[in-house]
Length: 148
Image 1 (cartoon, rainbow, N blue to C red):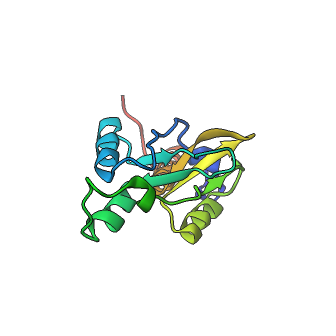
Image 2: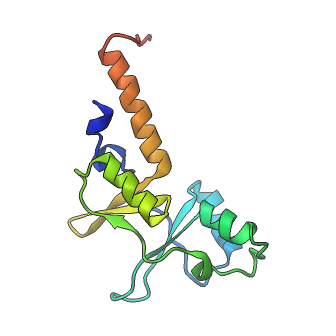
């Protein structure tokens, strides 16, 4: 597969992210991230008319730790990003996914299909997708051999 042909479907992770309440402490968020080995947490909406939020390790590092806030006292709701940036077109070219991330200044985007949560995409997902596409292209071109 050519890199230029990569789409959102090629790089999206299809498992759900753990959730944390907006009134939880940043320390609780850090513990949940470590326990779940997932450094992105979804913050549920408070009603049907509310938006989902998200807190990532980047938020914790750049907005809590770097600013000298106490993680035991700081609340998730004060440092999360909201509304959650989301995409719904799984056929979207990877460059537009990267543009959406860059323009929104986020490292994680939720992906919905037909109104339901489908998964998420991160900066790492994009890099992994490009790397694996390049490796597959080399194998298909006979440049690299796979040994058993």
